[in-house]
Length: 147
Image (cartoon, rainbow, N blue to C red):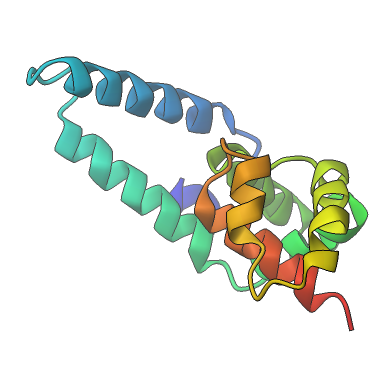
């Protein structure tokens, strides 16, 4: 993943590993919750991999602009660096279970009249499978875009 992000090659199409890693994490968490036995892969290793994936996803500076544009318009990045940006965005959407821009817009339209300082708690009720990291970013995009 790091090599794909840092290299200038355009071979950034592999997103299947995100789903595989999420399955491994869910399996390991389920196994640990039922017994004290370790799974096939040590939980400390999986935890380190999870942390590294989240660091990579949060380290891209141009990502916030791409995510904002995606949430507002539903369009995927089309700039010169589009392959890299599209891959990072697809990893982020998969990793954090980001709902579609249409669903987010519909939820924010209902939440905005309430005038909360943060919509994250209500967004979490509407999208319980979405990680708080993504909900915070959706809150930033949704409420900062209103001027």
